[in-house]
Length: 388
Image 1 (cartoon, helix red, strand yellow):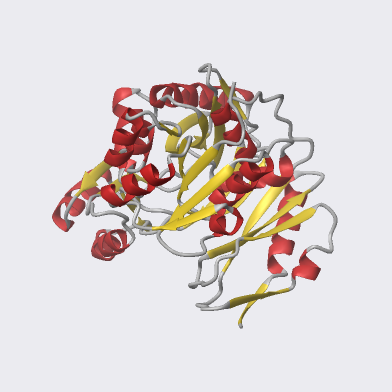
Image 2 (cartoon, helix red, strand yellow):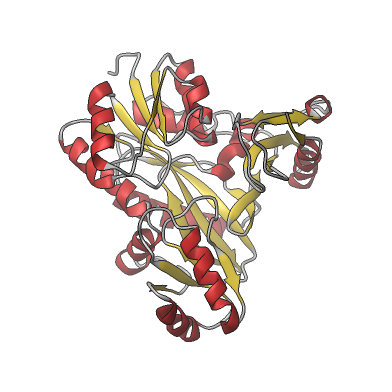
């Protein structure tokens, strides 16, 4: 039996880490928030803050050994995973585990695992490490196609390419959006899917797996813009998605919540990506579920029982993006945004903004998905940003 309070170290302190920290603080846990810049969102609600380069193995090990947390919880992909594997061998638990963190930090490793080792249906894909290889592989796969860095966040560096003449621009964009030192990109068949879903998959300490109702979502340039729950997919497709998610999550092992993404085309279910942590599309669960994804992640890693997960009413989320660059941002329209019943607003607390940066999210409930999406959009549209 776990004794509280537990000390949890967050590696990455963005908006998802902030909501996880809030859930942890409600159970009296001590939270250490780490990131590469000061006053990141999760740092604003944590006990201790550390600013350092988490891709530097020595810096990462030094900070971990300084605090000796009970659990290390990665919230981002760009980490010194070799250091995490070494730390794990010395007895500190990494969530879900160091191997899963390493495999999922790069699109090539998780795609190879899903397609080549586990035989899951994926889009056709190839890799390139220079422009010549990109041209050769693109011709082989055929246009249109997607080009992405093997490591990036929030859709950075991703583009849809419809003809050969645009490959050079796409290559430069992919490299500019890449995190880490890799110059490798993934070239992916473009699938004209009917819908895409996130299946929040929770693996518990006894190895059992439970699922949240599926979440539908819309992306633009590879980045989440809106999500809704429950997604409208047929029973057979949902069962296939749950089967595929179980296969890959059980292979990765460990404990916690995984965000597993799928394309749905006709009755075909196609594996897309996986994050071994709460998912941005799952922000909708802050209003739609009786236990949100951050609480579920916390319960799973601490061994706390999880009762039935219920969506009592359709919910939706809509991101709030910065319309410009701001060095000291202010917000107008919050009163109007929250004047409607069954709406919520999250302002992440990021101090600076660049155009297109995600600064908050609007949440809403409705009698059906269409109504929930409409209310979430209206709530988000109320927010205006100013330079203070």
